[in-house]
Image 1 (cartoon, helix red, strand yellow):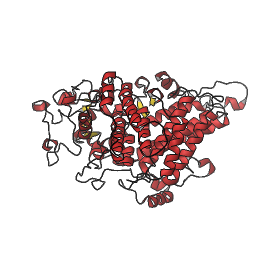
Image 2: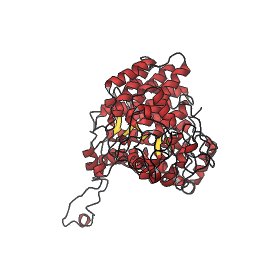
Image 3: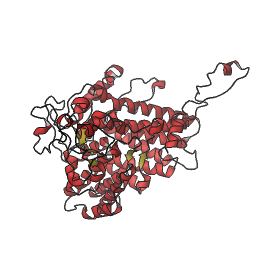
Length: 533
């Protein structure tokens, strides 16, 4: 797969050699291919990698959502003060830039996919067009879940004269995206064009269909409180169509550091300030310890003593589960009332003299998260099974039992983490964990709590922080206590969306204004439509 990334991402410009007496051919730049020569499938791996970059690293997930949902924590001082907008909901020097990253990267990717689709249709490649739709819905669903109402029905139509598209309200946008997704999945046909240059599924249309239906399941479950009828319709359609059947079907995109396509979250967590100041949150560590979760030893380590060792991401710490201590969100190193040394359960510093550090005993992510060849987990079998368990509890017809779907989800979560290099949970530990943690079916509330806490833990441990945040918004689990740090931008509440990028005020002002009015404001705390909690 890495070979595909390096080969095809660098092959977007075709070299066409031609030289004869024809004036037009002589005066055509042979290094620039027009639509008649260009193979649109060469755009696909670029779009897939761009989606990976959209959902990882400094585009927003590490800086905002990872700490809003209390998976990670940071004192966000010194060399890593840019984490203040995540851990404490306080503006950093680059917050305004971070706000617009997901919008810009998302729409840039969707635009590229639209170009691929346009070329695919002119070259009689319907399957490539349908795959483009699946990828575009995936991309824009990610964007709308972050911002709310966005351009969709009029987007990417500049050639038709629409340069300032209207914003679709989510109440109509989600059904439209689901309908487009459905049409794309059913349109895939093995008798038509083969998908080439595909670094996600190597052109396997059966797996693309499973991915499409699994994405449909996730998107439909977003709507359980806002539009239960549409939710039920598409959840049942997705399961009947065929969602992931094992971890072999998962949408997991490889990285390739050697050829310049490294994991963006790993790039961030290799920065010295990040190595030192980014720790697992107390909320996460306490949750894993309370359940004797075998993933704890895989994901968390206490660094060797001293400041130098705490800043060194090339050395391993102690991953003994009993020693792990999470850093509570909302503390700093400033010496005032919120200094971490005053935290009620402060475990004390490590090192001495100039090599002392107050953070030394707090657990940091292990080396699997600093591996630039780490994969990007787009959608997993574990998440699908947890969502199916919840769907059954809500009375949807998806077959099986909620307890079995939940158990399958737990088992898959233990297995999938091995797709990180060095992230293995033994089969014996996984089996024992699943057996001792059955779904609590004593009440609907108890079941929903367990299921959605596991979605939060599983997606967070796979560094899919925006999905963890979205599902927390939808379900309300886990129950989190907000940080109320001085000067925060969200009135002491956990942010539930990002404001629109400032560039929209100049490029599409009237439609932006209408969208803000429809949404009831443009703040960090006014919810998107489907977030009805």
